[in-house]
Length: 187
Image (cartoon, rainbow, N blue to C red; front, side):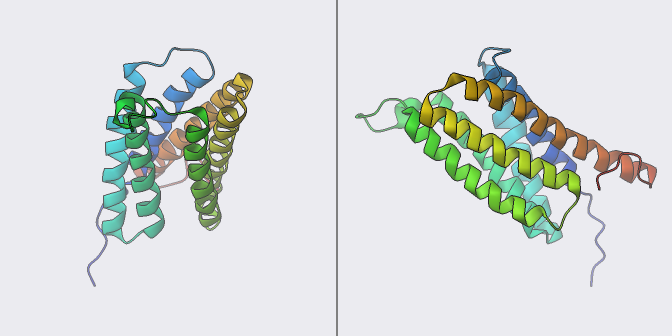
């Protein structure tokens, strides 16, 4: 059997997810307008980098990591596509109605809830990332179902916490590996 001498792709995927999530949720919280910067980050770092991390997790034989990083990388790519190309829809509906976006977000929330249950055998830090992401998707879906803008603002602040937790876990993985000991605890 060949020894596993491959690097850990999780910090790349977590950082791509975390930084992109923070940027989008700074907008959701009402602190910045929606801009090309968010879409570029979503496509390149949130999307492509996470897909690369997912493929690397596949090579390492990590089904959980493969599923998580590849799925959320493709989430970011689909989110960018929905934001940039509303004309791709049928001529009858030229933009995505809030209820349709709510269904999209709700489905991602259900997927994330299942991934949260899968994370229960992982570190507490990873469990927090998935728990907070589950809540984020459900809050954003509720905002689109109800039209209550204040839910979106609350979700934005919660999303900033979610993204920051992913960034913390990414940095903990890198720093702990570099120092060969626990510098930043992950539980």
